[in-house]
Image (cartoon, rainbow, N blue to C red; front, side, top):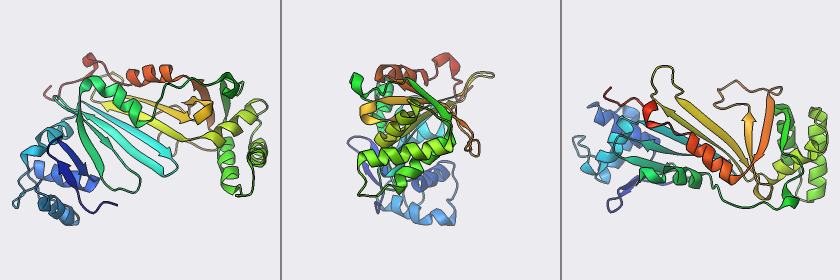
Length: 281
């Protein structure tokens, strides 16, 4: 974990934790941060982003303006070997800031980007690559429909697999576990085992904005990156999923998709200009 926030004035980028952002929000509203944030305030003062009387550095102007009056907020949640990481983009009236987390670090790096690169930036955050999957790796099924309980059974079997088990033994254990927890049949049964064994990461991108009355103001997509077996969109449970909404009997439906289709779907997450309500409206 990093010990201190930091900034790079030459590129207008900052490394800040959520607690530092909370301090800046209080100061921007002319409020004294609560006692639990005094240490974070001191760190910001130590590096010169906040003055002794709570003055905000001019270097923060673009970032704080975007954070205070965002047109669109985008969250990219990626779960891999190191657990979940939160990335995102803040689209302001005049500037766009991208932020990335890092395993083991409290701070995220906030970097200004050009609005025209927004889809590229989101694709980078989830490591979307144009890789043609060999026909032999396509598993022979275009989709799998089962329950979340079956998926839980697959992950439980993987967690219980021992170091001395080879891939075939692990696959057999996963298939047996899923078969006992669901009525999934072949070839989907073996396909689900292969997907969970090859899973590199899962990711979800969610966009929110202040839409006009009656307009759709939240859009989301969830995907499995299964490495050599390609990308699979999780169409059920349908995003955005709320806490407590998923149980063992909840339908799980994943569909194989191409990188090109995912690129288009990421672009479709962004609202059109006419969908947005200006902050001064």
